[in-house]
Image 1 (cartoon, rainbow, N blue to C red):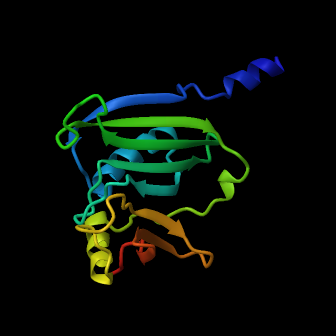
Image 2: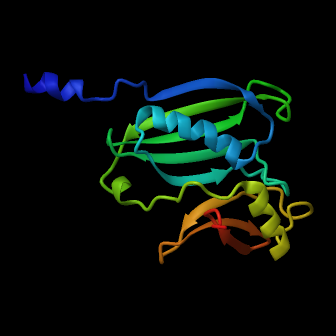
Length: 178
């Protein structure tokens, strides 16, 4: 009897699911990727907490990337979900390839529940890329492996981060109140 209760509480979701997102293709902003990632997390646990967000290594001066990844802590399920949106790897033309959403679930560790969460809503990547460019980050002739990622600083403040020629650039993560 105890075993049956134990097994019935296990996740009924497969550990990895993958499906097309037909209305997204090529490079996308974090806002476009977020709308799909948040929906995927919310279907699992409406109380999800965003703990990681990062672009692929191809983010451009417009703040667009062909890959965005999000990690969510799902407190109601004691799981974490890694949600990746990327150009379909089976398509030879990555610039026009349809988007694939991949969701990977795993049991949460005790540390996962303690990780700080990012504020939602947050600034969209084109606005952040423009701020980084104004600070001197060179998305055009700089390194070809630039990315944007969220970071929670020791003081609890959430920021966007990018790196260019061994320099780190920071910009506020949260939307500015008007």
